[in-house]
Amino acid sequence: MRIKHQLAIFNALTRLLLIVVLWFSLPILIEKVVYKNIDKTLLEKKQKFIDHLDKEEINDFITRKDASETFSSFSTLHNEFLQLSQSKEKYVQTNSFFKNESRIIEEEQNDYRILFNSFQYENTSYQLEIGINLSEIQDLTFVIRLFILIILSIIIVFTFLLDTVFVEYLLKPFYQIINKKIRNVKAPERFDYTNIQSYSTDFRELDEVLNQMMKRIQEHFSNEKQFIANVSHELLSPIALLKNRFENLIQNESINEEGIDKIASSLRTIDLLKKIINNLLLISKIENNQFVNNEEISIKGLIEEIIEDFEDRIEEKQIIISNQCKKDFVFLGNKTLLRIMIYNLLLNAIKYNINNGKITLKTAFVGEYYRLTIVDTGKGMTVSQQTKIFDRFTRIDIDQEGQGLGLAIVDSIAKFHHINISVASTIGVGTTFEVQFLITVLKKS
Image (cartoon, rainbow, N blue to C red; front, top):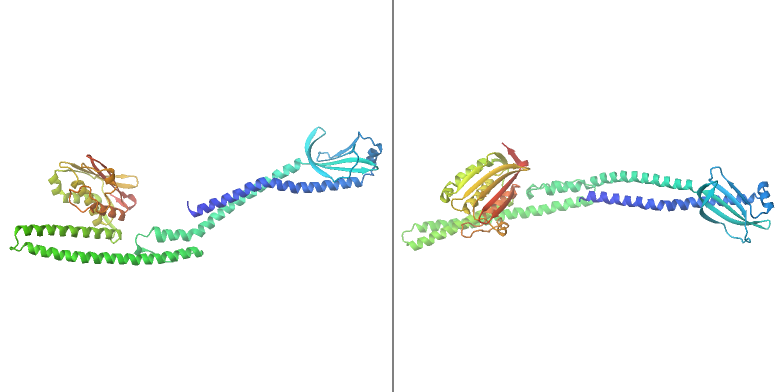
């Protein structure tokens, strides 16, 4: 998951957590604030009522001094009530206290916040209760919670989008560094040292360090290519000199047949050594991207040319070649390297095939790829052997001539052209090589 997505998810989760916390804590906070205001109002009403006890209707209730009677007063909508009654207990001065209770007034039950207060008037103890309906407060609390939830949700969505845009802008230099300087660079000499514009010191430093690192890599890369060229020249020169001397010696009439045989064996060894050096040099050049890959190549025509080159070998082993490559296509790459790749694959199919065997070549478009399949009826390979065939100096059959570099070269050429190669083999049945060319670099015909 990319950093910008992780940051966006983190910001969204933190804001969601904030909403959850507020959703559960708001009622408590609101209740405290509301109850504080209600209690203040109730205390004011209590004080106001006590201050006006000399009014006629209340005095009438008090002068009767009937402990069974209660003075009650409530609003039309039952939002408030006041209740005064004589206390049966002896008056003891206490502070007022508040309590939430459910009361039925005129057959209507509601929850009230009630102030309880005891006082003495003209040597008589009284209990005063003043209540305010809580239903409106509860409705108001719900509305406030809902309103805050909506506001916070809008804020979260807006800030999430704002964060996404800002993070995208902030990380833009980072993705430019990846795409321009890392992902699309095929060789050190093609590296772009242009500084990436960024307002972030971190990305500028990353860009600078990457440029410095690539300069060192390019320097080492150039030294390696020069070293390989020098070594190959220094090795091939004495080999060529030895070969010339042995060829001159073999023409000397004073040397007997035994000496001639030894010289001929030495010449074969020198030729083998020369082939190994040339193959290793070829692999090195391929891996160092020292070949152009912008030639248009007809794969069908290339296959037909290679089959013609193997006519003698095919006749020698009486192998039947079934060329079923009907559709042609043009691939953009290096013709010399692709010829070597297909040549080596077909050479293996002939070398490890049985006498009177068969080789089948097929091509087809499958999904995003153009597929070339080479099937032989040879000895086959074990699963363990199949995992090692592309390693250098790996020989499946020691009785066959070769240096074990043919399929290593095939693997290097395939990677150079972004070609996929897979192998499937069964002992005693044969081997199938499947070569897949990506269609995006193909031209159908």
